[in-house]
Amino acid sequence: MPSISENTEFWGKNYVWPEAGDEWSEFWGTAHAQWFGCLLPRVFPFLKGRVLEIAPGHGRWTQFLQAHCESLIGIDLASSCVEKCTERFASHPNLEFQVNNGLTFPAIDDRSIDFAFSYDSLVHAESDVMSSYVKELARVLKPGGVAFLHHSNRDAVRSRIALYKAVAAMPLWCLKSSYPNRTCHPEQSLSRLFAAGAVEGPAFPSTRPASNFKGSSTVSSTFRTLRVLLLAGTMAAAPLLFAQAPSAQQTPSTPQKVVSGTPIAIVPLDNTDGGPSVTGALQVSGGRAIIVASGSVTSGTRTTEVALPRRGTLRVCASTTVKLAADSSSAAGDSPSLLMAMDAGAVEMSFATAHSNRDAVRSRIALYKAVARFTGASSAYSHHWRARSMSAEKMRDFVEAAGMMCVQQEIVPWGTGWPLMIDCMTTIMNARGSSCRILHNPRFMEEAATIKQIAALGASAKPGTDAIDSL
Image (cartoon, rainbow, N blue to C red; front, side):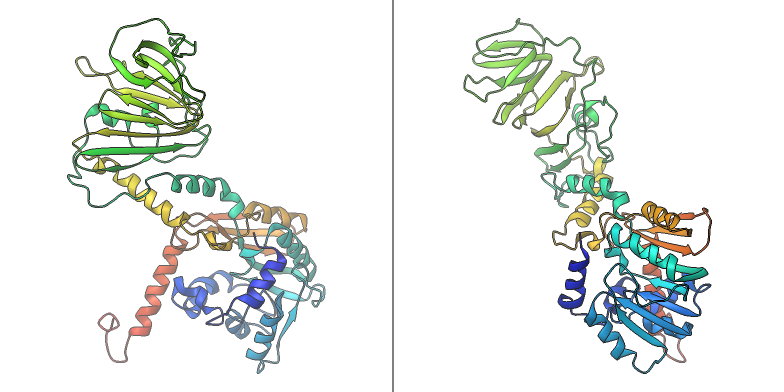
């Protein structure tokens, strides 16, 4: 993610600052609304004396900070930002701005700062920068001085980001809204095989029923297709399910014992290199392996197409092993349901049905769409260009190592996509201590939306009229 030179290049030369940075307050409506509704309530007890603002940009927060301090010094690694602030606040002799190297505050004397502030800037700073800045704050803050820093927490949620990206990459993302008969459920055997469930992380239990695998699907009135991409470790076969299956490899030249029973899958055999291997309780006839009761199919270098007795097709992708079995727990008189398990790889299934299952998976559809929105950005600034290596925990370690106290951390999401807690607002005091109050605020962006609405209400009110009526 962004290095010091990349941040300098982007914010100092490439970014055009259309509204002097106020454009980044769009979730709150305006910078004015964000300051008075969101930031001032969090910092007002400490806002006094000589203030240090780290990375002021074009003065988005300087315009508000200057009214609460005796003097202010702004430090930015982009010389163009320093020039802009110097020009913008030329009428304020108690404000000065200096360029730094992105790591230290050479222009600031020891123990000279009452309050240090940075918001919506250091989220782009990696852990090496934040560690250096915290050491510098320990030097420049007065005893008992306070710093309020907004920084990245992306390192703490990296596994979730990887999971959501994997889910978003599944085939057949788009679940159309024009399905017929949305309240109808498929027959029991199909719903057992394709039972809907929450998307979970890769740390599944070592054994997991095949009827609980996760995927995305499209449904129409005459045909149902389900495709699923499984990562390594997301599914393992229950050991008792296939305990009785023979282990010898099945090829056309080495037929296994012929058994009787209801077929659960039919696999075309191939003498050429890269063909499939089949094991289990089999019938071999006409160049086909008919799996009865239980068995497994391992694709070679090509996709293997397996016929299912319910007018369905299972496509086992290259280098994938799938284990199949009839569900012995099916009710008496019912056709047995099909269970499937695999360790890793990819499969695609298609089979006919005259039913829709949308009602059963509507919550999953909403989940997948939300994940797709969150992971859809392909630009370098996806996840709001948050520093990958920084987290709230690392900030606590940096503060403790510098001999200061982390008073409070508020961990929050950012943006309107999937609500990952990728940001943190840390309050630091230049004093010894180890007590830190950690707040998780997943509704931070809802707070922003409320502030925006209230600000719009006030802006729309006309003198002598009811504020609500004037909207």
